[in-house]
Amino acid sequence: MSYRRGGAPGGVRDLDWSPSTWLLLITVCGALFLDGLDTSMMGVALPSIGQSLHLPAGSLQWLVGANVLVFGGFLLLGGRTSDLISRRTVFLVAVTVYGVASVISAGLSNDLAIIALRFVKGMAAGFTVPAGLSVLTTTFTEGLARDRALGIYTLCVASGYSLGLVIGGLLTEISWRLTLLLPGPVALVFVAFGWRVIPRSRTARTGLGHFDLGGAFTVTASLLLFVYVVVEAPTRGWASTPTIALLVSSAVPMGAFIAIEMRHAHPLVRLGILRNARLVHANLSGFALFGGFGTFQFIATLYTQDALGWSPPAMAVAFLPA
Image (cartoon, rainbow, N blue to C red; front, side, top):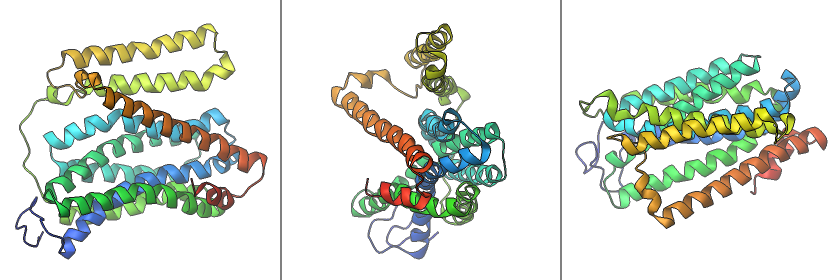
């Protein structure tokens, strides 16, 4: 891979980038773009999927929730793995898994199988994002070059989610299966590009204990159980014995996660950072913003298409300004 005035991976210092540098940036940013595109397209296609497969709203919720929750649960582990193994290897394997899962899910009609593959895609994205970000920060030196690269990277988040509304609406008019299929071939193209342009990095010698697998699995299990309680509570009753039992059950793995992080020599989350009031406030604000908007979009999507009879493209254009 050639770099101008940089000389070696991690040495891109100016803004006069070579074609291979641009291709690396397109590959990494393109993978992030697909994550936003996929989530947005799935949101638009939910009513059509529900009608085709005869799924209730609770099952439809998992088509989005499974992906997002597992992504969040494995994001920290993905960053740790890319640091300890190889950011190049983690990125390419994760994007490959993401692409293959997308292609397979497009041909399925069983809701549980599709949801399971949404889990797989969320986990793959949890490894893709930190590995890709690590590739950029080690390829572009601090200063104008890195600021420009990260600016393009950030832009892909917003553009992927926004364009996903429009593209998802258009594809759903043809077939909702296209919204599941589209990210697959594109992701595999990025893998082919990445194999060529992402520089190799040295692999650190490390043991299994450095990964904190217990922390990643317990926090993810707690989140999934909690969301399951929220989804099922309206049917079972908020004060019913099963609901209360499941709510308590969701607290058990979270307690285990806290215990693991406090005792682990290499924790995914150093709990001492929670003493930082600004950090806690920022996370609570982000939770309220994205959680509130995601919930609103899920309900409004079903309402506008199922109750008001809007077409998927009309619903997508209505949401685009937001």
